[in-house]
Length: 429
Image 1 (tube, rainbow, N blue to C red):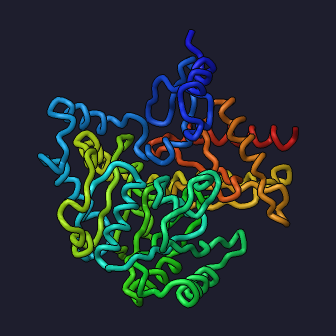
Image 2 (cartoon, rainbow, N blue to C red):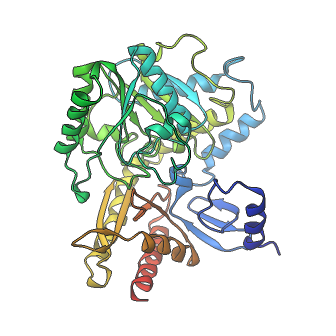
Image 3 (cartoon, rainbow, N blue to C red):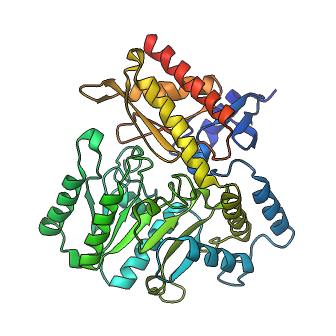
C-alpha cells in the first residue's frame, strides 16, 4: 500500500525545502468539508486550503461550471482572444465591490499578483512611488509583496534587499497593547519623519490580518484610514484575499466599515479552488495604466472565471454570508468557553469577525507570553485525531479556523471536540 511516509521521503528528495508542508498527509480525495488521505484516513478540514474553499471542496455548482467550460476550451489568453466569462465576472465584481463609484476589474492568477498590480495601478494613477503597509500584514511572497509583508520569519529571511519606498506602521492590536489611536499616531509620525504623504501612492491594509493572527481592524479605524487617504490624495487598497467571499459575514470584510475602498484585491475563495485573483477598483484609477501595462498569460483563465461565477451564485443562493455569522458564533463561543476553564488558562484571547475565528495561546495570561510550541503541538495533535488545523500570528501562537462555510453544525462540533481534547491532553501532559 502507498503510504504517507513514502511520499514524505520522496518529497524531501524532490521538492525545494523552501516550500513547506505543514503535515505529512497526502490527499487522495475531498468532498465539502472532509478529505481522505492515500491511506484512507478521514480528516475534517478546518483549513479550507488556507481560505480558498469557503464553498467547500468540489462544490456541485463549481464542478458543473468547470466541466462545461472544459468541453469548450481551457486556455486562449484573455489578452489575445478574450471570452465571455472574463467579461461577465468583471461585470459581476464591479457591482459587488462596495461603493457608488463606477468600477472596473482586471484578473490575474495569484493573490501576490493582485497586490503587485494594485500597487502598479496606484502608482500609475498618482505618479507617486511610496506605499504604506502594516506590521503583521501578509501580502505575498514576490519581491514587492515580501517588502509589503510585515512579518520576517519565514517570509523575508535571506531574500533582501527589498524594494525602496515601502513603509510600515503598527497594526492595531489591543491584546498586545497597540491601540487604534497609537496606530494612527504612528502613521502621522511617519508622514512627519520618514516620507512626505505627497509621495505616497497607496496605503494597503487587510481588514482582518491573515498570517498576522486574525487581528481585526475596527470600522472606526478603517474609516479613519479612509479619511487620511482622502486628505492626502492616497489610494486606499483593501486586501480582501483572505477575508473575501462571505468569510466574515459580508461578501467583503470592508463592508462592515461602510466605506468605499479605491482598490480591492481578491483571490483565494474567489474561484472555489481554481487559481484566480483580481483587482477591482474605481474605474478612473483602473484605467490609469497604459494598454498592455496589466495582464498575464494565465490571468483570468476560463476554467477559473467560470468557477468564480458559480462561486458567487452559490454564496448568494445558499446565503453563506449569513451562515458565516452562525458558524463564527458557534466556534468563537466554544473557544471562549474553553478559555473560562481553569485547566485551559492557556487560552489568552479569542477573536472573530464572522467565521474568521482565532484563538491565541499563551503560557501565562498575565504576561501574555506567546505559547508557540504549544500551538505547533496542537496542530500536530489535532491532525493525529483527524482534524486539519492552521496556526498563524507574528509570534506563531494563534490557532485560526477557516472551515468551509458549507460545513454542517455536526461536523464543526466534531472538529471543535478534537481541538478541546487535544489541548486538554497537551496541557495535562
